[in-house]
Amino acid sequence: MKKVSFVIPCYRSAHTLPHVVEEIDRRMETLSQYTYDIFLVNDCSPDNTLEVIRELCKDRENVKGISFARNFGQHAALMAGLRFSDGDYVICLDDDGQTPAQEADKLLEKLEEGYDAVYAKYDHKQHSAFRNLGSRVNEWMTRIMLGKPADLYLSSYFGVKRFVVEDMIRYENSYPYVIGLVLRATQNITNVMVHHREREEGVSGYNLKKLLGLWFNGFTAFSVKPLRMATAVGGTFAGIGFLYGIYTILKRLINPAVPMGFSSLMSAIVFFGGMIMVMLGLIGEYIGRIYISLNNSPQYVIREKIGIEE
Image 1 (tube, rainbow, N blue to C red):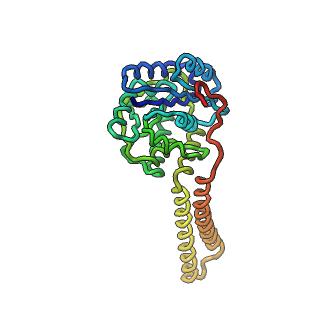
Image 2: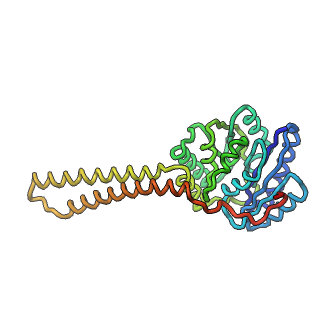
Image 3: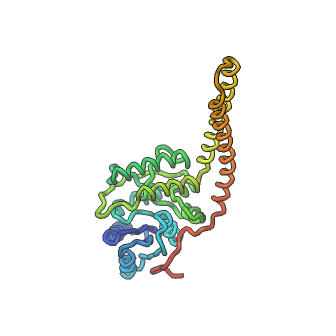
């Protein structure tokens, strides 16, 4: 009998989390071919989410809790849950009820068909305009920087096979980016349509600062293309400066009356500024690779484990 592990990052979800867990229970009761457990990761939520997790773990043996010492972010919480999970399939979803746990069987069906990973795709997203804009930027970033297929839709509701999880948890960089880890492990990924609900209460925890931080994680941890773009821009400006210098010399030869000073100064600034950008880009290429390989800061710090045996 195969096992399914559910991983749920939790932040300000004291009121919605019990409903999500109950919905998972109801759905999995109809899927008798699977056993399952649920990992609730408290990302140092300022409300009483941790107390709710304790109550859920007390009432159910298959519900386990992890609590961080400080707020490390959604992707760090996912990594913690993935490391403690042991299911043949792992399904990650949100704690606010917007990702329908009752449709988890659709993800499992695709995994059983042979796909290594499956992402939920929504017919109509119930996010704010700001979150939808952030999703579009994230879509563009993952396609350009990480090589995501153009027809693949990415979301926070997804399922992966065990071997993908094992590859993901080998990553120990302090700023994990789960989407990049999945794309690094496999390209055998598909989508399945599910219904996206309206948020029961509260607002999204992602503000502009957190979204920018998430995108920069994807840039620096899984791609050196930004550095290469800086090198290309530097080379372009160096070339423009060089051509402008030739133009200044020819203009002076053709018309000696042309005053000198400003044009030659601007030519030198543009040329040397471009060359400096080229050098910084090349140095950054190596520093970026060293950073990716050798950063040993912890992804998260666990203060408490609930229902998890050592």
